[in-house]
Structures are given as C-alpha cells and as structure tokens.
Image (cartoon, rainbow, N blue to C red; front, side, top):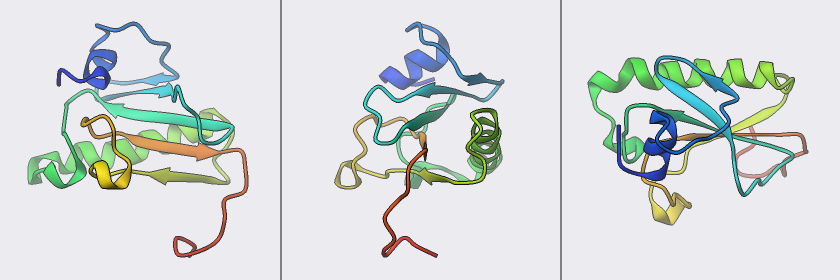
Length: 115
C-alpha cells in the first residue's frame, strides 16, 4: 500500500464509497469528472507509474483491465467507454499511485486516438 491519497483510500484509511472492490483493487467516482461517468480503478498495491511496474506486476495489471470491464458493465456503459492511464506529470498524472480512468456517457472526439 502506498502513502498517497489513493493508497489511503484503497486501504480504507480514508473513507470512500466504493463502486467496486475485490482483493486487488477498488473503484471510486472521480472527484473532478471529465465525463458523465468517470470512475477510477485503483490497485490496492501501490505502483507509482505504469513504467514503474515490474514483471511480477503482470497479473495485477491484467486484473485491473478485467476489473475495469466489470465496473463498466455494472455501470451500464460496457458498449462504449474509454480507458485511460496517465503516466507522469507531463501526461496529467497528479497522484503517483497507478490508476485507470473509465470515461463514458458522452461522445469522444475522433483523432489520433481513434482506431
């Protein structure tokens, strides 16, 4: 567990309403939503950035993707959502505890990320 705000939320040290929880991660609503549905999937084990993940994090990383799919289905947005991981402050990461953003409920602009 990390000492970041996300580590404290995932451990229960900071109370939060979990939309989803299992042995490896939790999901919460983003406090500054960028879409009608904006949920964070946070691993209970702290990894600062995606590039800091090691080979032994492989199962956890796969688990986070599967959990994101379950959360999307639970929220009824499984047919159209965007999954984002920011890596580093230059990419918009403000909390250095790896987390996935599930964004849905609006159309997203096509462009370099389309495909």
